[in-house]
Amino acid sequence: MKKTIRLFTLVTIILFSSCEKGNTLLKGTGTLKNLTGFDGCGWVIQFDQSGTTKTLEPTNLSDFNVILDEGKKVDFFYYKTTSPSICMVGDVIKLTSLTNN
Image (spheres, rainbow, N blue to C red):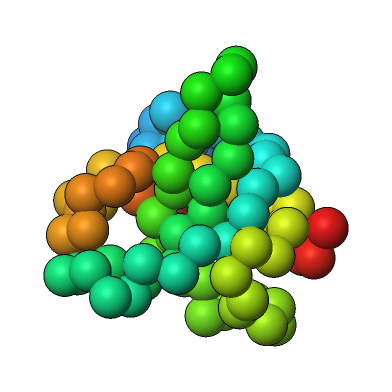
């Protein structure tokens, strides 16, 4: 019975840890931009990455207590997602932290 419980625990750990592969926590500092006038768009975050301006589309921006102002600087941590974008201006992400810069 103990071997069965150990085997079940091991298999469960392997399965759940394999689901997290590719979900690397990333950090950024960027600027809020309001694209709500465009079809399917809302607030996005723009930042420079290696000399190129990159746009991120957060799916959970309303989860954070930050006043949304055009041009406001923010620091954030995020995961890239595989969710499709309706706005199609950048990568769709899920924020884990968002603070004023």
